Image (cartoon, rainbow, N blue to C red):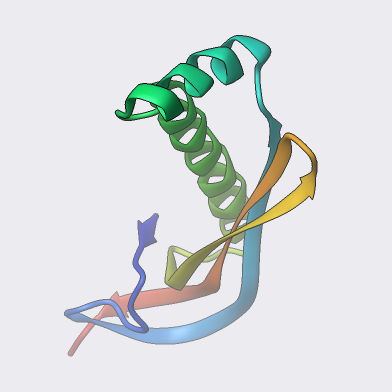
Amino acid sequence: MIVLNIEFVPGKNIVDVKGLVQGNTVRAKHVGRDIAASFKNIFGGELVGYTELLIESRREAMQRMIAQAEQLGANAVVNVRFATSSITAGAAELYVYGTAVVVADAM
């Protein structure tokens, strides 16, 4: 599956548009991560626990979007975008979306 954040696939033609595909995940903070983060807020530095949480969230949301594109018969997703939103105190949603398409080699 080709996944790009641009509107086309270089060297290929879009021959069919399957439609919008999306994936999301809602994650809550872990108490241990919150304690470590509070110390980092005082002394400075990367919040490694939250970085790892975001990496896992992006990976899961992307896998869900790709699975949806595969179900539609697409072989690429173009114009991919990410968004986040707060769900409740301590929980956030990571949302990814794009356009599922079928591409073929350019003639």
